[in-house]
Amino acid sequence: NAGVTQTPKFQVLKTGQSMTLQCAQDMNHEYMSWYRQDPGMGLRLIHYSVGAGITDQGEVPNGYNVSRSTTEDFPLRLLSAAPSQTSVYFCASKGIYEQYFGPGTRLTVT
Amino acid sequence: AQKVTQAQTEISVVEKEDVTLDCVYETRDTTYYLFWYKQPPSGELVFLIRRNSFDEQNEISGRYSWNFQKSTSSFNFTITASQVVDSAVYFCALSEAGGRTGTASKLTFGTGTRLQVTL
Image 1 (spheres, one colour):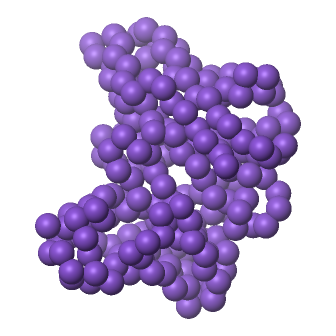
Image 2 (cartoon, one colour):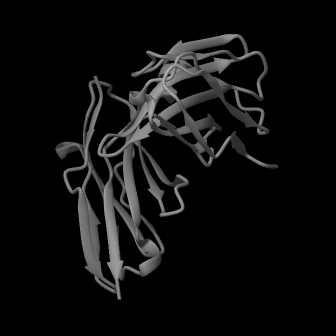
């Protein structure tokens, strides 16, 4: 039981490049979400999904796309990276009582 | 809209001191959940506690205790006899309870309090 896994751990992108942050969970949770963490701002919700085929926007969705084709996977796509997207990204899945967070991906956009 | 305020940006204490981390929240919901998470220097987020809005009993878990006061919209966290391993950033968070699953699962975080415990 690996919990929530995220890849890669670190990534450096140039402005305008695209990439996908991967997130997977093996707990059969319906609800998954993506947060970004910036200094002095806590964690802010980007997108979330209540089940396969269903996604919705959170507080800061601009510049990010998501899809949920399976219960296990919830990838986050940056179509054209910008320096403002430099952040630490956390994926989470929600059980009955608590949300389980992945280890995070540190993304730098130059 | 929901809001969580952690006014203490950084706290430094000497080992064995007691320390309280403050959390004040705003919500229009009558039922909600409050959380505390710990983020050690390694970066992961560690769940500490979830509290229902209709349960105002204080909770103690080892050296940790939580004081929930609905009248002042506060959910403070106290570490007794602090240790170096308690050094971390601590986040308070809030979510709705009930209603649509997606809405009820969205967490609103405070900006965090960095706790530094030294020998």
